[in-house]
Length: 171
Image (cartoon, rainbow, N blue to C red; front, side, top):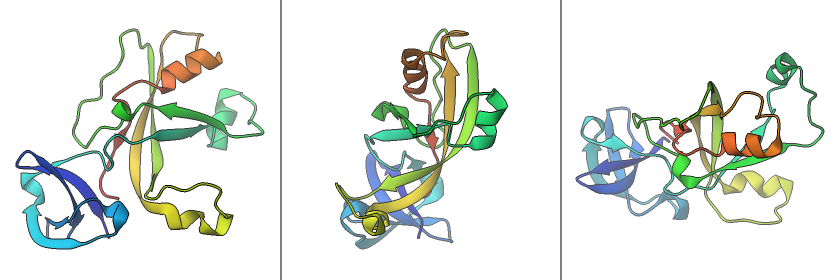
C-alpha cells in the first residue's frame, strides 16, 4: 500500500495511491488505522506534501561505513544522532532553500522510517509494530564555513538547517 499526504482544493488529505493514477482518500490520518472514504482524486490535480505534518526528524550520522572510510574518519563506536527542525521536511517539488554562507553542499539519499505510534521502552520484537511506513528522502548536508564542521556545534548547525530534506512519495 502506498500512502500519500496531499493538498487538494486548499485542504490537506491522506490517501492511498492507486496504480491507476488516482488517490483514494483516507478518513483522518493513517496513524489511527486506514478508513477509506471512497472519494478519489487524480494525482495530476493535487500537490504532494511531506508525508507527515510537523515531523520530529532524527538522523544517524556516519551510518555508511564506506563513506566514513572515504573521509578518513574513525567509525564511531556508538551512533551519532542529530535532529532536524520540523520545517526541514518539504514535499515533492518544493524548493530547497540553502542558508546564506553555505559553501559546501552534499546530497545524500536516505531511507526514511515514519513512526506511526507513540511508544517508549519497547521490546525489540515489538519495535516494527510502531512503523507506519518507509519513504525515500534526499538530505542536503551543508558545511557552513570551511573547517568548522568538525566541531560538534558546527556539525549540529549544518545538519539542522530548515528546508533541506525532501521526503518523496509514497509511504
